[in-house]
Each structure stands twice: as structure tokens, then as C-alpha cells.
Image (cartoon, rainbow, N blue to C red; front, side, top):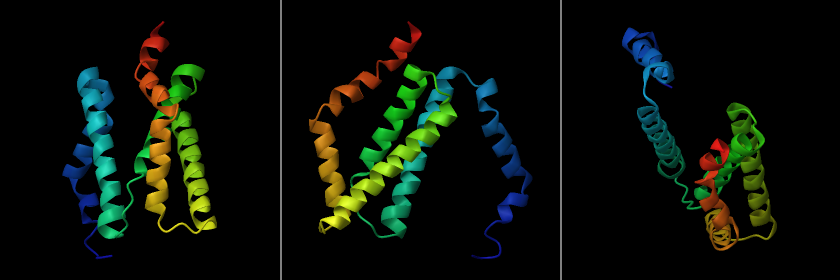
Length: 147
């Protein structure tokens, strides 16, 4: 690592932007807060894709399985069981990681050619199975929770 790589941490401008971003829920309207949340989610996905494909040279098209399982599970835990959002995210991340480890174990156990093909197959199976109605039902979870 270069010595000046973390020099921005001593900048007061960085800390002002950080403080403004940290207090967004206090002063931003719910609509713009939702837009900012979705934008930050896509920024995180783009950074993850850059690390995996750009820096690491990996080609995997099955990340949607883990994003979908984590997102649906965390929202279902919050809306159906009333589990805290942060705890639900940790549980969903753990289950997504366990699913990824299981798929990787299957891939290496049966000596399939590439993990990306296995992930695409799993994504297609979930798309064609009964998981699709569950995914569409996730959009109406907020309506169910309001009742």
C-alpha cells in the first residue's frame, strides 16, 4: 500500500461529508432516503463486481442468487417475524454465505468445470421453481406488514 493512500482520512471535508451521510435519516425525506439507499446498494454491487471481475479476473454471473436470498430473507425476517433489521441482515448474510459454501462444495465435489456455470444453473433453477412467486410476493410484504 502506498503511504498516501489513507491521507484523505485527515481531511475535514471527508469528515463533513461522512457526518452528512450518517445523519441523512434525520433530515432527509423518506422518498429521497429510499432513493439514496437504492443508489448506495447499486454502488456496493458495482464495487463488488469490480473487485470480482475487474481486479480478480473472475467471471461469475450467479451473484443474483446470493443477493436475492439475502434480500428476501432479511425483509421476510423483519416483516413477518419482527426481527430487528440489523440482526436480520446478519442472519441473511450468514445463510447466503452457507448457501454459497454449499454450492461451492457441490461444484468441487462433483468436479464441475466452473463455479460460474454452477451458479448460473442454480439461478435458473430458482427462477423456474416456486421461488419466483416468492420473489414477487416480496414486493407485497410491505402491504402485508401495514395491515
